[in-house]
Length: 140
Length: 121
Image (cartoon, rainbow over all chains, first blue to last red):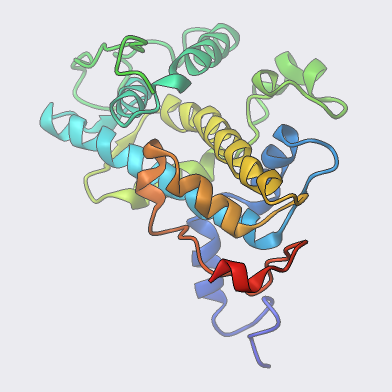
């Protein structure tokens, strides 16, 4: 069957699956978009797909920065603080306050299971990146 | 994703959920996969990291969507098109890393109320 019109194909399925794995699900992305827009707004399929790509790129971009930091500090595990630090460095410091609130609430709910930075999967060395959110970083 | 549901279940029902109350709008496993693929340097990822991203992506998508919508209404339209996203990216410094992903193109199905094609040249 010609696979240009149908995504449910037998050949090239791996490619399609691969493609989807590097993107956040379009339904979830769509929902977030709709939540922020007025009720009468519509979103084209292409715009949703573009947003999917952008969100993945955002994750990759920030993760790259965070993992660079870990590499320099000879740590094997990228943790939540590294991600927050990277975001601040890359100009997303506006996200820091709500992220902090979110993390704090999650830690409250989950107990201290995920809270302690020492609980990395590395050789028991405490995380040296105790940099919390710094709202004093360059303004957005 | 179910572990936090008991605490947040009260917020999950119905529409209009305030975004800060729904912890897992995005699948953590998928986020983790994307993180791993981003660089060969990424070896291990703490449990919290995808969680931070789930919230951060939400904020990111909201911001980019809001900015795209500004472009949409400037064009006197009600449907957000890819070009609106591209213009939002182009006009926001912090979104420079997205320039290659979303570049303003002349659209094939861009609907313009005025259809002033000549003026657009």
